[in-house]
Amino acid sequence: MTVTHNRVLPNALRIPALTKLANKRIVLASASPRRLQIFRQFGLDPEIIPSKFGENLPHDEFSNVYEYPVATATEKAVEVYRRLVEQDPEDPPSLVIAGALPIR
Image (cartoon, rainbow, N blue to C red; front, side):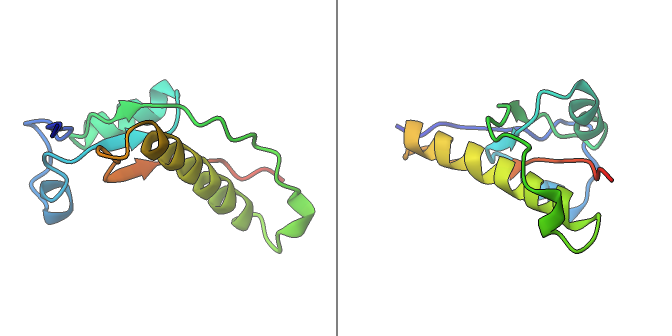
């Protein structure tokens, strides 16, 4: 069974990166209303599937404040992607977006 997705809204910016996402499965690995609002401002309407990854990476393993949020966001996105592929291998997401904030 083929599932059709279109998470790009009609009012999306007409730029190649967003145009390529038309009819693709886009997932936001966060329940943050603000992150969803930002994506909708760009014309994207992602599925909301919050990550179950615990934000508990050891801060002292990172050489600067910017590496921690990148590693945390990566782990969140990978966790959601793997979970979705496990649930339905025939309908993997095209893009999983996650975020994290730097903490000092």
